[in-house]
Image (cartoon, rainbow, N blue to C red):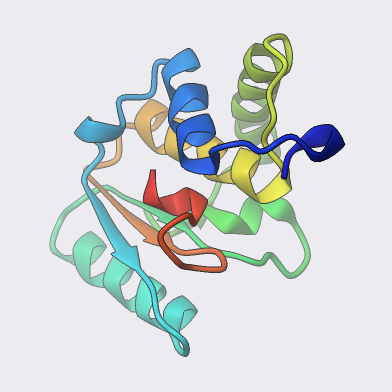
Length: 139
């Protein structure tokens, strides 16, 4: 349920939010990692293999331990505070001006897609959240 008990279609909300940000989800080349155990390790290994093969990579994982920027890596590195803030506030201003219904994880998922497109990565490795067919990372 969304605000005040309204039902929202999470995947459609994520897709719509990406559209508002001009994120072309179909153009992002992603490896989607799901499962019960080892998603973080598998995501990290996969990203490293792709990077070593010469691809510019994006890695989206959760949760973060200390700093939210840990969830988003480009070519194995966390974005600078300044670069992250640029992406964050661009997304926030566009989405919040339109009455966005995204929760924290869903917003960060959209932000990840936005960052990876803006940073022009060749391949994204996306770790699912809670999983299942309605997980926001399925967008």
